[in-house]
Image (cartoon, rainbow, N blue to C red; front, side):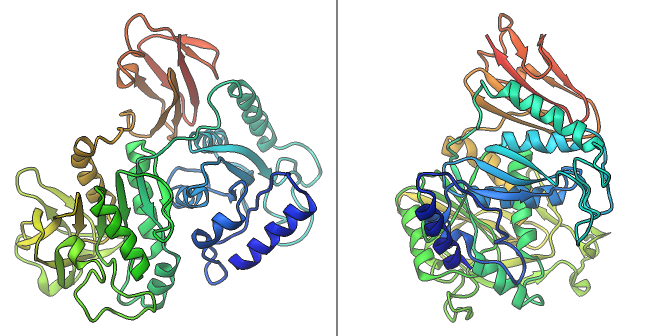
Amino acid sequence: NGKFMVKLARTVEACAPGIPYSSNHYAEKENLGFDYMKYYGSFVDYPGMGFYPGYQAGDQYLFLSGVHYQRIAETQKPMWCLEFQTGSKGIMHRPYGALRMHAMLCLLNRTQMILGWTWRSMLGGEEQYLYGLLSHDGVPTVNYREYGQIAADMKKLEQYAFPYLPSPEVAVSYDYDSDWVIQYSPAQFRMSYKQIMTEVQRVFFDRNQDMNVVNLNDIRGDYKLLIIPGQVCMSRKEAEAVRQFVSRGGCVIMTACSATVDEHGQVFSTPRPGYLEDVFGIRVAGFARTDEEWSFSADSDIVRNEKGRHEMLRVGRKEPFVIDVLYYEELELVTAEEYVEFPDKKLCAVSVNIYGKGKAYYLAAETNADMIKWILERLTPELGLKQGIKVPEGIQARQIAPGQYFFVNTTADEITIPFSCLNEADSSETAVEYGVLHDCCYKGSLSLKPYDAELVIYK
């Protein structure tokens, strides 16, 4: 547990004073994990993890990327990937370039160290079919060749602004207790906490935007925006931290189901969101599910997908968009105002309340990436948030330093990136664009082959 990790860290420090250390513990393991966010400040020197994203930048990668951010938390230090995928169980390799792509994504997301697991494919034990850099007979595999390219790339990049360590303006709360509450009551909370955090990670992946994962009991940074996604369990101390954040001028977004139970796991006998009804200026009066067929109207937009047969929810009237969710709430506005509605339901979809010097937004649907992205687009100019680089879909990009832009193609298609998306001074006609990884100059745009990456610098 967390206390053991703290004791272990003190032992390491005593035996090897001044030596950096890390750990790839599995705090998020179901039934066997521990509250990392509660203890990390007492035992983490360099954040570490095992990174096994599979071979595509899909939901498994997004979930693992969220864990990646959680491990970094507010340490202001880079990640050490103490285990990094080579092959997989029963899969030697697929497709070539995907491992390198994930390594480049990790560099883009504040990583400093990548160690392949495993070196030689094991001759026995439960991981004997988890293929490594060498085959069972000791001969190098295709993984070995790809890791050679990763090492050569990192050698080229080491003189530039890596590890990338931004100062995010947005914080996202993570609550270990909420994960347990959701697991305990799956009939009520049908969206797992893993799904909730994956949806949030999808937002920042698509927007090419940095964020920090924070513990509401111990927020250390100075943020303009705080997002609280599906935090079912809300303690008095956490609620007071949110109250102070908003009253001092911060902006908070909270999604449905949040603050349903207190720190003891008991449902609130006072209006929801518990402890925070005054901050958000609402009362959650009820809820409905989009798969309740008796509620379908004649003009309902009914779909059938992996969620089953259910109704899509339309948001807004002037520029409506549709979200795919299974749960939404009926809000009573007390001091809050309606920001946007579910027009087909004649219900408030997003409320906004002025509290102190700040604002509190409540999203009356389960955590949904499209809905969060929609409101972030509108709040970005108001809050003065730094926008992510607007590149073609499938490209991840960051400006890692003045005049230094890092791009990663996460798809199996070649994609062209126009440099007009960059800083105005760097995209001028007189700028010289040099690609570090491919050792060539570009003019006006960059074409990245499948799973490829490039660091473009301007001189």
